[in-house]
Amino acid sequence: MPGIAPEVSEALVTALGALGCEAEFGLALLRVSDEVPRPTHAQGEQWLRQCYGLCQRLVRLSADFEVASQAYLAALDQWAVQASKTAAAAAQLDRSRDSWGAQFDATPDVWWPERGDIAVENEAQDFWLRRAGYSYRHIVNIGLAAHLEALAEALNLVLHALRTLPPGGVLTRASLALGLETLSATFEGDLIPHHMLDLDARHVGLQTGILTIARLDPSTADLAADVAWARGELERARATLLGSRNGPGRVTRPLTAVTGNLWQKQIVTEWERTVALLEALRVAVPQRA
Figure 1 (spheres, helix red, strand yellow):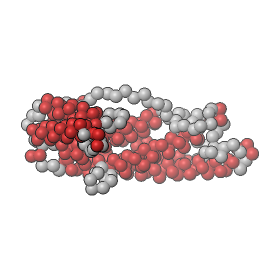
Figure 2 (tube, rainbow, N blue to C red):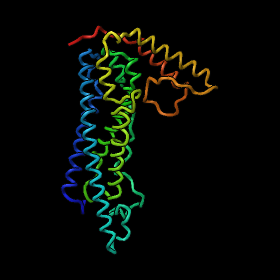
Figure 3 (cartoon, one colour):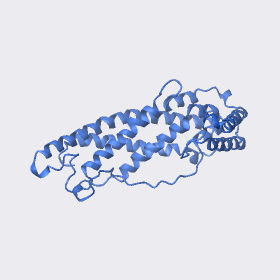
Figure 4 (cartoon, one colour):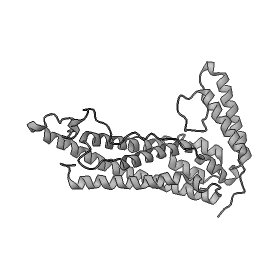
């Protein structure tokens, strides 16, 4: 992009490239159940270690990207101020849309198109870990599935953005700026503070959650106890549904990949499915290595 110092551009390219590499690795890692359909406890432990390492790297790389993107955005703003001082660039005050961008609608947008994602049915990581010999009820209470879902969405976004990044001279300054701000908000504004790190003692992030699950006593991973707990949550959800005239109440949600309002009936349906899946599991004796 003309007007941006080479060192500023290089820092942004390096930061985005590092995020892109981790996005490719992370998305492959989160599809582990396809590669290891019958996990041992040792394979589950290795997967948790890899997820924890990914989280640690993303926290650092997200901070690096934030610094690089803010420096780049500041350079874009500085270019806009300088350009506005000339008569030919008098209309370029708002992030300085270049001559190419002037041919299009004045409303800026990010550079990547809509993905049109199609949901792929595969086993959730919490059930995969259950079959690897980990306690399902503890995994749900920690909120592991919701954090992993947010992680996958963020990694998909950055990978999609990089794959659709137009060549130089085509992307408008306004679209580039908005795209960088969106990616920054996705990682530093949401993923890291709300899903990687702990909000408080009751709402732990992915890093603390992974360590907690990995350190659980194997004796807590009793399938019968998980089924009994899930049945109890199902009955509590049904009782809340029947008494909904007095308010929605609070019940645990076992699953996360559901859109729409959190109606009690929907939660009951989720727990019915969860109980059925747990009862259908045939967990082999965990193999330790």
